[in-house]
Image (cartoon, rainbow, N blue to C red; front, side):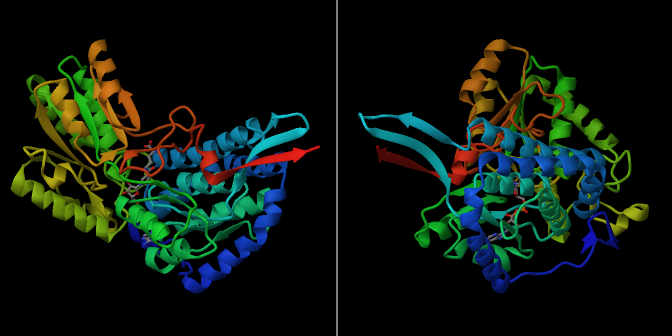
Amino acid sequence: MTSPGNQNLEIGEFAEGSEREVEAAVSAAKAAAPDWETFDVDSRVEIFQNAADIMRDRKYELAATVSLENGKNRTEAMADVDEAIDFLDFYSSEFERANGYEFDTGEPTPGQHTTNLLRPYGVFAVISPFNFPMALFVGMSAGALITGNTVVAKPASTTPLVARKYVDILEEAGLPDGVLNLVMGGGSDVGQPLVEHEDVSGVAFTGSRGVGLHIQESFMELGKRGPVIAELGGKNPVIVSDTADIDEAVEGVKNGAFSFSGQKCSATSRVYVYESVIDEFTDKLVTEAEELTIGPATDRDTFVSPLINDGALEDYQEITEQARNDGTVHTGGNVVTDGDLDAGRFVEPTVVTDIPHEHELAREEHFLPFVTIHPVSGLEEGIEKSNDSEYGLCAGLFSTDETEIDHWFDEIESGMCYVNRNQSATTGALVQAQPFGGWKFSGTTGKFAGGYWYLQQFMREQSRTRVE
Ligand SMILES: NC(=O)c1ccc[n+]([C@@H]2O[C@H](COP(=O)([O-])OP(=O)(O)OC[C@H]3O[C@@H](n4cnc5c(N)ncnc54)[C@H](O)[C@@H]3O)[C@@H](O)[C@H]2O)c1
Ligand SMILES: N[C@@H](CCC=O)C(=O)O
């Protein structure tokens, strides 16, 4: 494997698993499950707290690995590692606070004594995407493991190294053999047989809508009864009102649309701007986009980093060509090959107008530095168009009118809702403070990662009554 920003730089050679490795991994996870369930709350929590400490000590090395392997710039790579540590800290403290989800429910009638508890399902498959190779791999697998399941985990085929490092960290932190099993490889060679394996009871998946729904359907068809906890894509809308501070809105949309080159499920992708301010907003966004530094992920001042693979580069060329034909490209639309950049997959941040609301460029998730701007007559039209999507992940509003803000919070169909956030209009949720998940086709459970109702999904309830 090579680095997305420099294809002359070898990251390493990695195993490509198949059904045989899946079989061995599931069998190890199944064998380890009974013992792992008997670990008490404190012993389990201690392992994940140890892992968080090790990651804090190795933060710069891990972030550098993320940068080289998946092309995140320095800030984004550090945030990825920080988020992983936050997941470990938060899930540990939550599991501890809930006493492992075991409650004494008292004496329903004299002589009877009852407890109510949540118990693990058994073996979970954890399948993660390339774009948060540390945070999402760590977060999902920690959710499954701390609740007493054993895990077979498959990272994205483009980011195996970060996953390997985390598995080693957990081993060093005290996780017993067989509790977490890593199988590297592709979606159809490893992911699909893993999901379909008869001893896999539940799946935690983050990735595209198509793959996530396919996993859910496979589970149903096979008559499996455990959960498919899937976090899927987004087509995240932002409304800019005529009462907004336009400079703040431009800053928020620029950061939301172009950080990590738009390769975030939370990326800002369509902006509905009141007609009276759309020209000012567009001109300023174009100026800002043109000032962004495009470069290797590890360079200190790089903002726009490379695309993950050749497929993404081809998609970029295709959609920008379509935008030229069907709309107006104000800036961007080109592959960047200046100097050393021809060794990587670099592209310009792209701002487009005159694309009809119904156009697929304004409806499909592209996962690229590409944003469309659309005029609206006011808040109602902005909300109607924002909600007219099969996705419901993140949304933003820029307005200084309290009535508009309250109305938008009530009406917007979205998991994460941000008002006047110049840091980013739609990206950058923090674990625990801003739990992350999607409505509609952006997720399957309505419960959010890094939130107070996440861990329970990995467990099933049991009521125990004993007559004394
Ligand atoms: N909602 C969220 O929290 C969130 C977070 C990050 C990324 N995403 C989404 O992830 C997508 C981008 O990541 P990606 O390109 O890695 O996604 P992807 O769906 O292509 O791949 C995700 C994972 O699924 C595996 N996979 C592929 N086919 C499979 C199959 N048939 N069975 C089982 N596993 C299979 C892949 O190998 C990879 O490990 C975007 O759609 C983005 O919105 C969502
Ligand atoms: N949690 C991240 C997005 C994860 C998906 O790509 C954010 O809030 O930006």
